[in-house]
Every structure is written in C-alpha cells, then in structure tokens.
Image (cartoon, rainbow, N blue to C red):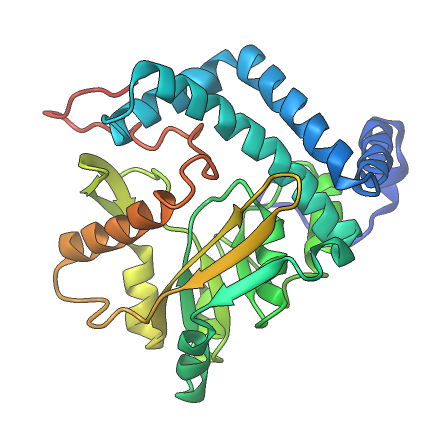
Length: 311
C-alpha cells in the first residue's frame, strides 16, 4: 500500500465494488464456506493443499529445505524433506485455523490451554506494558485468538498491498485484537506500550543490518532486528517471551500457549548479547513444534562480506 494513500485501515470504499475487486469478493465467500466445514474435512484439504504447495512452489520449498538443513544439522536428508513438507501442510492447516478463528471461533472452545499468564498479569499490575516476543507461526491469527481467551492482546502487522484485502483482514482481526498497529507506526506502538498494553511482536525475520546486528540463530549468524531494545528502553515495558502451538492428535488438536517470565536486564548495554539472547529464546520455542514456523522465509538472506552464502 502506498504511503501516500488516504485509505484508513478497516474503512469501506465504494471503489471496492468495481469489477477489479470481484475476484477477491468471490474468494472471501469461498473461504467463509470453507470455515464452516467439519475439521475432519478441513485437515484433509489442508494436507492435500500443503503437499501441492510443496511440489509447486519450488523457490519456497528450496528455501525451507535449506533453512532446516542449516538449523537442524542433526536431521538426515530424509528427515529434512519430511519436515519441510510438513511445514507447508502446517501452513495450510494454519489458514483453516485462522478462518475458524475469524468465522467460527466456537470451534476452539475447550481446546486451548495456557501456562504462565501470571507473567503478563504481573507486568500489568506494575503498570507496565508487555512486549510479547513471539514468532511468525503457521497458526497465524488462530494463535492470537487463543491468546485473546485469556488476555487482551494488541498486534503489530504489515498492511496488505491490496486495500480491499487489507480492509477485510483488518475487520476480521478486529474481532481478536483490541488494537492493530502498523509496523511503521512506532509512535503508536510506543503509546500503547506506555498505556500498559500487551503487544505481540515478532523479532524473528531478516530485515538487514540498518536496524540490526549479526547474531547466532541455531548456531549460524543471522541479521537480527534490535528495534525491540529501543521500544523497551523508551517505554519501560516488560519483555515477555510468548509461544503458541498446535498439540496432540491432528484429528482432535489442542492449542497451547506458553508465556515465560519477563526477561531481566532487557535491554542491557550490549546490543549483540541482547539479540543473541532473544534468538536463543526463539530457538528453544521452535524446537517444541519445529514445523509450525514459517521456514519458507529467507531467514539468512543478509550475508555481509566474510560470511558464507546460505541460499
């Protein structure tokens, strides 16, 4: 979306009725129909779609396999292939789980468990915001919905390039999150943290080194964002690790939320040490359910001089 656009998130525009948007409207109706299907059908469809995506999306498949090879050297070539395929299946399962969170949220009743809620409650009792350090999970907004059953989360998001799609997703997410904060809206993010809000924030992607450092991720140097250090310093918010994942039999899944104690001495005076510490927390989280992470992103794309290329 152009920064010059006058579009307001969630706002309907009459131009959305033009023929160029009809395909999106039809797709949304189709997705709503998928959301009312029984889970037994949804997970079979997701499995078939995930296998198809694994076979057809060659570039994403190659990136996923390479990421897993780098991060899990103990896996055999066969194990890497099997786990890589499961990443695509889990992503498709996450699409259906997100549709359920948007359109059929009662499906999650009795399926969600949480551990460590007291850590967010403690921060709020002290008048602090909570920067919830999470990951780009394949659960997508299903994880956010699970969290919303126990506390009132905000989320940092990247607007969609298509304004109609952005409006539709924004409105669906509004049923889950109290506030949706544009990733470029630093003032808004700071304001909400100072107001004591818990905000889901994922510092786990490669955005280069303009606002980051090279820090080990699964033992391999990776460009690691450090913006959260400045946020924590300016707002005095608590840095609290957050992880959610699907657990148990796929035919009858449960969803678990793991909230760890607030990090002490975060931020410290050592930018690299802080980045390494957060990466290690994310590593430990991802080892719980390795395929429920978006490994198809090029996590190691930034390679300064002297570093071996990964892709």
